[in-house]
Image (tube, rainbow, N blue to C red; front, side, top):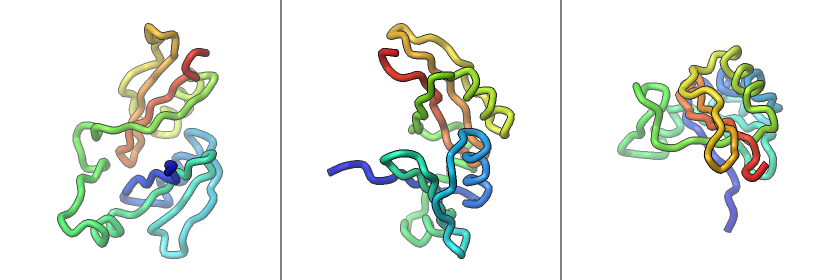
Length: 130
């Protein structure tokens, strides 16, 4: 077993792909012609986006839309970088909301938190033990 991909359900797949390209420097791998599913080149594990309408098709009882939640959902995606401060600034410039500025953690890692326009919670962090 291995983690193959993470899918974030969003209001606009195109907008989320564009934000992640601008804010974090990812490259677009794929956008379905329907515009309801897309993927980024993000390393071994695929980061994907799907429209809320696909979630509605998959989950009969509905789902909690991060984009509609006043508070961030109780999960995050961690992006590892050697320059957390620069990544944090770039994300804010692209439209992310700051939740916590870069700070040194007791174990030596630098960590910040931003919330993407689609509601996703992102941890920007230096490598553990760096």
